[in-house]
Amino acid sequence: MEINKNFSDKAIEDYNLVLAALSGKQSAYTSIMVRYREPIYYLVLKMVRNEGDAEDLAIEAFEKAFKKLEQYSPEYAFSTWLFRIATNHCIDHIRKKKIQTTSIDDVSKHEKSWGIQVKTKTKDPEEAFIEKQKIKMMREVVSNLDEPYKTLVEMRYFKELSYEEIAKERNIPLGTVKAQLFRSRAILADIIRKSKDSI
View 1 (tube, rainbow, N blue to C red):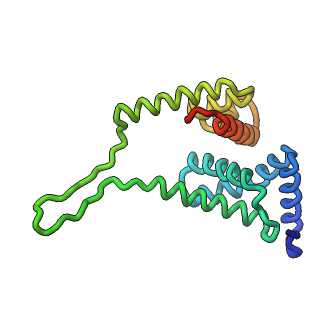
View 2 (cartoon, helix red, strand yellow; view 1 turned 60 degrees about the vertical axis):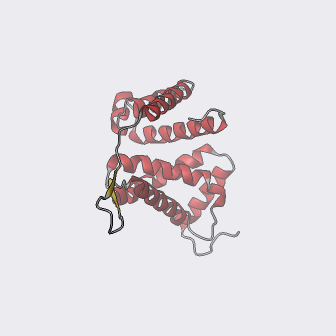
View 3 (cartoon, rainbow, N blue to C red; view 1 turned 90 degrees about the horizontal axis):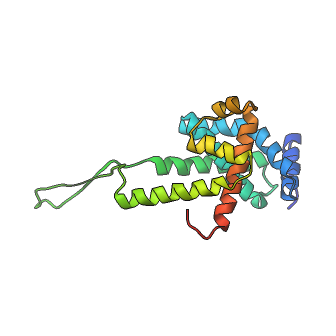
């Protein structure tokens, strides 16, 4: 499909970056992320109102967009397409996060009792065991990553440090931390997909 003739210069630049990324140029992915990291982050932050969640969701939105890059049509500006993916990803997250704590089952007039179901966050022994196994397997996968990805993933997800704390501890720019963590997650996702084990 031909590029939209009404595109602005910025939209044309975006389209050229998309073409470069699709041709295998890794720096094009970084350029797209640097260009849209803040707008996507603030869009997500407005929706979820939590800085930690917003950071993770923004990166996940880029992951989704990059995986679907071949589906992008130049009929619309790339920014419009990217913002739609981020918005939909946030909506999915918000829906999943809405936990119904109590539900009262209506019973017939003739019954004297109400059925009450309370959802608990406590895992039963089987769930706890499965969770432990998943964490163990994930640690094994992470241990096989090359540097700096291995260390960054361990700091972010095992030590639960913020992006700012990682940047300070490793003495590297915040943008570099986010870009490298994005790349780490993409590598991990690829390893997991190729693995026969279920994590």
